[in-house]
Length: 314
Figure 1 (tube, rainbow, N blue to C red):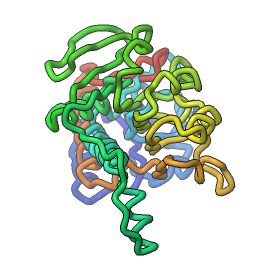
Figure 2 (tube, rainbow, N blue to C red):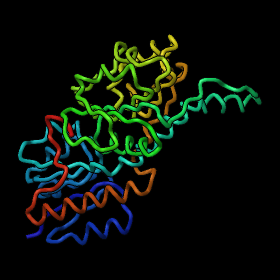
Figure 3 (tube, helix red, strand yellow):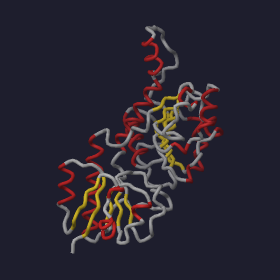
Figure 4 (cartoon, rainbow, N blue to C red):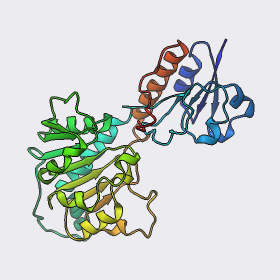
């Protein structure tokens, strides 16, 4: 008996054929979840993509959800009998490259030189830092944080990491601590890079106290979720001249309103949550690979990989 699979989104011909060639299945493609026909909601057992409760709770036969995202913290409401997997690892390298780019940009004060070019200025700025030999801390060591540290270590940085539990310290990490030990490391770090999930456990983790534990010349990079940094506290700290730079691909709130003071806070460099997604074509290919692998396993009666712990949100 065939298993009905609903696949959302717009897909390449090659990707669509890979879904259609899955064994013992019937695939229904829809660009938007709200366009799914009631009869397909009624008998589909697998959903591929991202959506809200209104769709998934309308699927009485639902057994498995495969997300196209790595983030999964908004799916705690799924019934216990529904298995949830994410696209863990698909975006890690691309996001890590973005983080490394903004780190180096801030270290070399490139935004200021670009502004100088616009006014045809010629000034030699001081305080240009070396990445080689710098102390770099990744708060979060999933696919993104690990990829960032691996690249940082390849360029000669001394790497440190924060993880919820201590296990499997990579050989390119000098010291691995739990969040309880993070405060002892912060005053010595040149770069603090966040790649945390948007869970309640990390909300407000970097408040004014922690931001001021960092040395004045340190750089904050955030490519995880905006709620891990208290926005008002960051604005206050940056206005006081503490921290060399804050490079934010995520922020709270998002999208950032046009009149929000964060836009004009000194030494804050903002990108509109673009480090992941499909802007790098290889990310799309990796997401499809992950989805096809998991769907094949589930159709064979085997457990998928990267099952999300809904209590943790990842």
